[in-house]
Amino acid sequence: MNDSFTTKHSKTMPVSRFIFFSSKRRSTDAFNLLKRCHPSRRVQTCNYSKSSGYSNGKTRIHPVIPVETRAPRSWGAYVIPAAILGFAGLAAFVHYNDERRAILKGQGSKSGGNTVRGPTIGGPFTLIDTKNQIVTEQDFHGKWVLLYFGYTSSPDVGPEQVRIIAKAVDILESKYHNEILPVFVTIDPQRDTAAQLRAYLREFDSRILGLTGPVSAIRQMAQEYRIFFKKIEEEGDDYLVESSHNMYLLNPKLEVARCFGVEYNAEELSEAITKELRSTPS
Amino acid sequence: MALEAYASRNADTVHADVLSEARQACYKARDAFYACLEKESNKTPTEIASVGLLYPSDCKGSRADFVKHCRASWVKHFDRQYCRNQRVQRLLDDKDSRRGPLTLPQPYTFKPPS
Image 1 (spheres, rainbow over the protein chains, first blue to last red):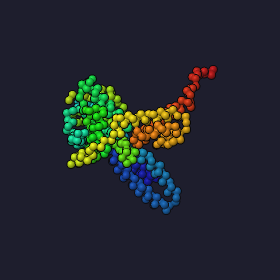
Image 2: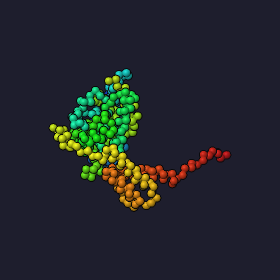
Image 3: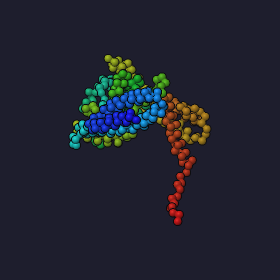
Image 4: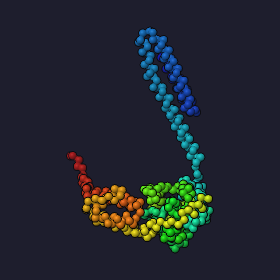
C-alpha cells in the first residue's frame, strides 16, 4: 500500500512540474520527463513484483492493477499539453512565415503578375532558315515573335495552325498595324529540309520564317521551350509526330509572354496578341 | 560545323505529297470515302480498313482512292479520328433512344394526418 502511494506521488509530481514549465519550454522536456518516469516505474514494478513474488499471489496481483489503470491517465495527461504546445508552435511558425513573405500593399512584383510564372521558357538556339542561313535567337531581339513548333507532314492540325498564324498576321497588319514575326520551327528535321519548308510555307505566307537544323539542335531548342514531340505510327520513313501544339508569343526581350493552344482562331489570336503588345510598354 | 553539314546534305528533296495541292486532294478523297460510309451505313461492314475500322464492300472504290491520295500514316490518323467521332456520336444518340425524358415524381403537398 505504501508503495502504491509513492508511485502515485511520483506520477503527480512530474506532471505538476511539467505544467509549470509548459508555458515556456517545448514538449521535448515533457518527453524527457516521460522517458525518465517510464523506466523508473518499470523498475519499481519489477522490483516490487519480484520481491513480492515469493509471498502469496494476492499481494502480487493487487498492486499490478492500480499501476496499469494509472498508466493511461498519466500518459494522457502528458499528451494533451504536448499537443497544445505543438499546435502553438506551429501557429507561431506559420505566422512568422507569413510576416516574412508579406508584400505590402502597393509594392507588388514589378511584372504585374500575369506574365510567365512558371519555369523560364526559352533559351539560346542556332538553326538554319529556309535560305540556308544560320539564325540564332539574337536575330529575334527587338521584335515580337510568334513561335510555332510543327512539321510539314501533319495531316490536319499543322496546316490549320499555320493557316491561322498567317491569317492572324494579316489581321494584325491590316487592322491593328502591329508588326509581328511568325516563325515555324520544324520538329521533324529528318524530313523537313530547308527546301521542303520553303515550299510548304510559301503556300501560306511568305513572311513566315521557317527554321530547321540538325536533330540535336532542334531537340535542344524544344527542350528549352518545353515542347513535347514524339514520333508515332512509324513505318520506315512514314510517321506522324505527336506534339503539344502550342504557339509562343515572345516579346522583344526574348521572354515568353503568352502561350496559345489550338483553341484560338485567327481573330482571337490577333486580338490577344494586340492586347499583349499594348500592355507591355516596351 | 554540324549545321553546314546538315545544310549541304539534304539539299533538295521536297516531299510534294504534303504540300497544299496534295493535301486538298487527300481531304477530298477522305471526305468522299467517309460520305460513302455514311451512305451505306445500313450494310454490314465486311472489309477491313485500318485501326479497327470496317467498311462495306460497296465503298471499296472510294477506299482505294483515299489510300492512293493520302499517306499511310494520314490514312490511319483519319480512320482513328473517324472511329472516335463515331463512338461519341453513338454515345450521344443512344442516350436519346434508350431512355426518354426522365419523369420526376410530381411534387405533392404533404397533408398532415389530422
